[in-house]
Length: 391
Image (cartoon, rainbow, N blue to C red; front, side, top):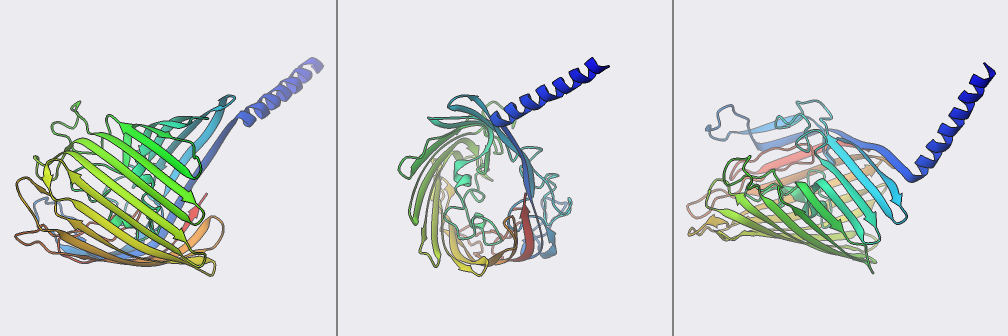
């Protein structure tokens, strides 16, 4: 009996020692965020069971989950493989913070990411040559989309309402890429570069059957500089074998340039961001410019921005005049604690109508978890009040 007790004590001590040694080499973190607020959108498209029915404008008022950040839950961690080499991983899923009936969730049971653990799911290696990640990842152009935006590509004033990442008209999924390989080089003197490639990016239309081997491919490069109060960056991306919407002749290759800058003046921050997208089988292009300012105010920040979107893309040999959409946004975030903020934000988008020489625009005010759809030529408005907590 005494021997049994000693064996139990020794075994427990060994397990504790081994557990302590493993804890030094391995880290694991459960993290997430939940964002709940009340929002109202007007000038948005009413859902219809008939896909051929003409668009009907409506207004939506209710509780949303994503005024700042889409609600999510994930696991991330690292493990030391050998001196100078570390294994990293991340698996993250979205969820509907107020249930499946949150504002215009679009029927996605996860409300963000497109599937269970499909916001991100990757494995990586980190060492002296940088970091290599493999799996489903946020694209570089999407990863940097908030760097030149006073709203950090969040709130109702997000630059994403105008960005070509979500308004490319090419059926290209630019926000995330499956089967992606990404390399992050070490930062040197404030400079950093990244490269990303996906042979089967998915989330996009294809020339033939969606299960055909000719899935769209994605190739992206990015470079940044940070020094003192100034931050600069540029992204370039190319998506091949993409199918246009609705013209099947338009597309094949879509290219996107994005550039941004921010300047901290102490009493306020200035931001500017621009994008230009084009296809090798189209006339015209798509452009976006957005400028903003962020002013510290009390325990929070006051944010304001103005942006303009232009689209003149047309399948050859057609030529179209540019169609414009202009966004005005204002917001305020208040720091309730280190992990919790209260916020209010509002935005207005003025869309141009269609004419014989232009398509018109149908951009809509939205946020991370509140995605609504606009109507050509119809102005879109939104206002939201809520709380966002990260853990």
